[in-house]
Amino acid sequence: MYARVGLLLRALPLLLWGGLDAQLSQRVGQELRREAEAFLEKYGYLSEPAPSSPASTRFSNAIREFQWVSQLPMSGMLDAATLRQMTQPRCGVADTDSQVAWTKRVSALFTGRRAKMRRKKRFARQGNKWYKRHLSYRLVNWPQHLPEPAVRGAVRAAFQLWSNVSALEFWEAPATGPADIRLTFFQGDHNDGLSNAFDGPGKPQGGSGAIQLPGKLLTDFEAWDPHRLQGRRPETRGPKYCHSSFDAITVDGQHRLYIFQGNQFWEVTADGNVSEPHPLQKRWAGLPPHIEAAAVSLEDGDFYFFKGSRCWRFQGPKPVWGSPQLCRAGGLPPHPDAALYFPPLSRLILFKGARYYVLARGGLQVEPYYPRGLQDWGGVPEEVSGALPRPDGSIIFFRDDRYWRLDQARLRATPLGRWATELPWMGCWHANSGGTLF
Image (cartoon, rainbow, N blue to C red; front, side):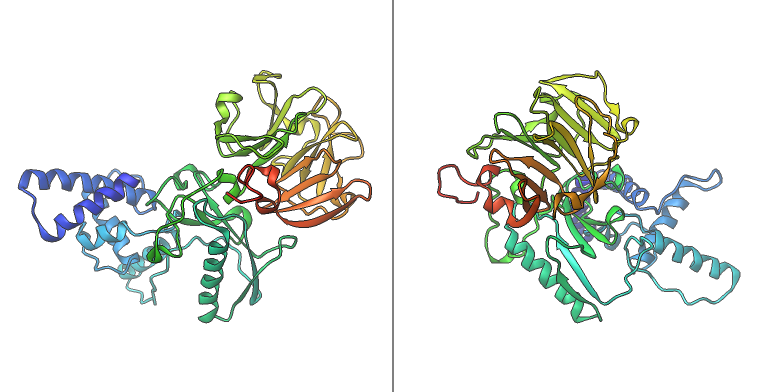
């Protein structure tokens, strides 16, 4: 799609001011039409062709519908204003609501019925609505090239603008509580279909999050910068996960961390020295990106990975089972939040929502009398994103950018702060720099 936007942008001055000979003009026009057709198909304006409908008529009708939705003159022609509108930043979801309104308008014209029709804004209706005026939000992560305070300030200012023109009031929720809105920056597939993936600069910039309603998903590829006109953008420093979040985390018997994000992972030594990102497939062949939980057995050193309803076990780089196993056969939950090897029991433990599951030794069978509620863990929050045993006997739990420390003697978890700025062994500090954050 980046190529499409680039082609349209390059062609606009030529369309506006001329300067093309006849042969080149024809070739550029054909290219523009192909790219425009791809755009219209992606956002739902062009459907499967009907046998009796000529291609030119279908294309002209689709252009006319897009112009109506965009509040442009409905010429049905691929003119400069229409091309310019196609290059504008937009949500990655099809304009289904506006297309329904267009269909009703056309029906009204043919039937002679008068109907009050309004052009609807482009947004993804999820079927939920708020029944309150005081709304909380949480910033789950932020773009890797921006400092957290700048992003929080920009989000706060944006919600204030919304509040200024509505009856709504917004406040940032604490890390330990629920939130009405969760803002998350994503790259690639975000569980909204591969056709709506956030795949690079100039592509769809956001979409409503159906899996965390009424959340909001934003692309992490764009050069988001609240001070773009006030100087150079700060350079990205340190590993990516330090500036956003991770998919999973675990530790081996040598206290070496393995931190997973997307199709990469980092190794962090006990003193906080972090490696370059490594491809998952190079170390563990067949392991998919965006794993949801990981743990290392401190008995035999085997790696366990979990994603969806599938489980993997590796001894070094070799799969133990030959192929991924279905976790539900042993009573494990799909899409676990985190996995932990718990030294006092010599067992793997999975966390999902408000419950935890203890696995039998060496297998994927849930022990009798489990799952149980998280209240057993004395203050560990729901939906944790990772858990680690520490050399001092404590357990560290992560959620978003926060962390908790569980004292096993008292079975009490204490919320402490932000892991990227307070835990030097996470690899987000310069080595031997006295605690300077990357």
